[in-house]
Image (cartoon, rainbow, N blue to C red; front, side, top):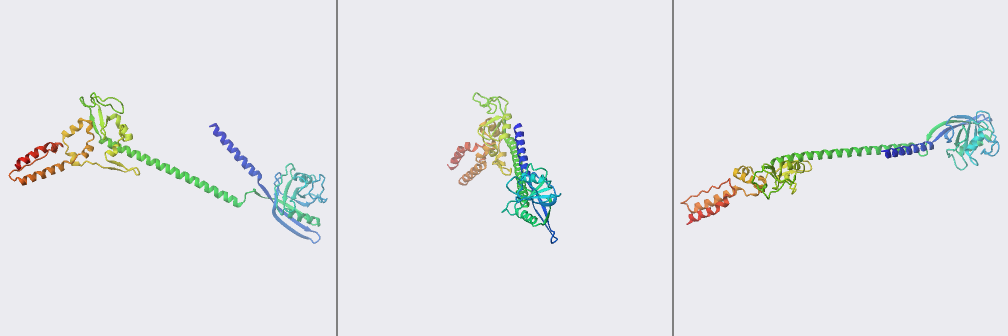
Length: 402
């Protein structure tokens, strides 16, 4: 947890540092209004543009006054004792860039009580400007203008034209920030946010749907397992059953020998287990613990995995299941090898076919020997009757023919 807190604090520190650097790199423009007054012709010209940039250490404030230039031919004002043409307050010093630092130029004008300093760029740069690093220049307004603008003002003053200037705070811009970049960043942020939220909603909905489907499927399978378990045969072991004898087996779930009066469950694969042992297993796994036989498939319960629908297929007809005699049920309940009644009934040949075949044979005998009528009614309750009566039936046919 401490490691996570340290990582989060480090990330926040990096973000704040980045934001501070971006904020510090922003430049503030200045509106520059220049008034040219020709005393000879009494003609005034006013020009206004957002062509100035405040220095990094300059106060972002307004300023106004008469524009003055250095008296000597060196307009870069790198001399410590540089004098200017007009120092009547308020006045603004116009200085050319080059040969010394911005701070030295501003300090030279500040020693003459200038209200502001305007530095114009070097030749062959047009109206390009930069943000001056005027640290240590004092609390004086300082801006930079382009070379063309500064040269025009310088030449006007050299011709005797009075030039006044008003500096006003303009807009704040970053080196890469403009209307298009702000729009692009906003749209990109909106698209990324919308895509992230949409994907999160889709992923959450998909997980919720899969979880509900899985839960519904498990509930359906448990319900089917309960139905299947209810259809499996139960048997109470008695003294003398082979499961309790010397060669008797033990329950594969609890690994205990069978005892008299134990209630056991007979699965469709003929394996038997204690009811209390195997029922929870079947409810959860639906397969035999030994051979993995699926009781749902063995009982004809088909489960559709996709939609959870269930269809029951019982291979034994109602007539055949109802025609089983109590003697047959007792025989089947005596031994576990007989298995589940419905599964065994599916493998036995239907009794109606044997009865119909026997009746056809008897009708043929009656036609050949019309003097004697023989009716043979098979014992439907005993499935082994037809095999036992077949030799006697053939003997009766021979006697009639003879």
